[in-house]
Image 1 (cartoon, rainbow, N blue to C red):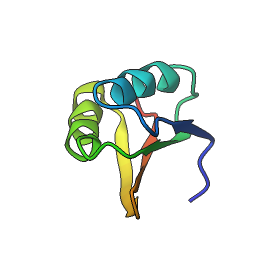
Image 2 (cartoon, one colour):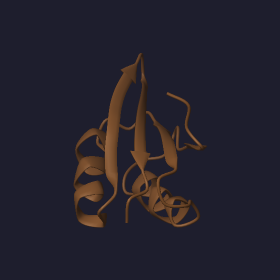
Image 3 (cartoon, rainbow, N blue to C red):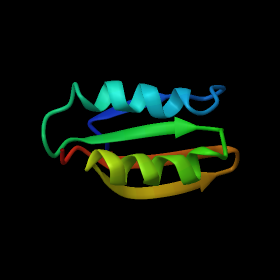
Image 4 (cartoon, helix red, strand yellow):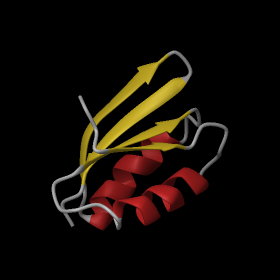
Length: 76
C-alpha cells in the first residue's frame, strides 16, 4: 500500500501517537491515506477506537517485527 503521508511515532507512547494522528489527518484531503508507524503495543487497541469515534476508516494494521504499521483513510 502506498500512503499519501507517513507519520512516524516510533518511541512515543499513547496517547501521543493518537493525538498526532488526529492532528495530521486534519491536514489531509478526503480519501487520502495516512500511514502511522508505532512501536507502542497499546496503539493496536487505541487506534481502532479512535477511528470509530472520529469517523475515519482503519484500512489495515500490520506488525513487522517491533513496528506496527497502521493505514487510515480520511473519511470524516
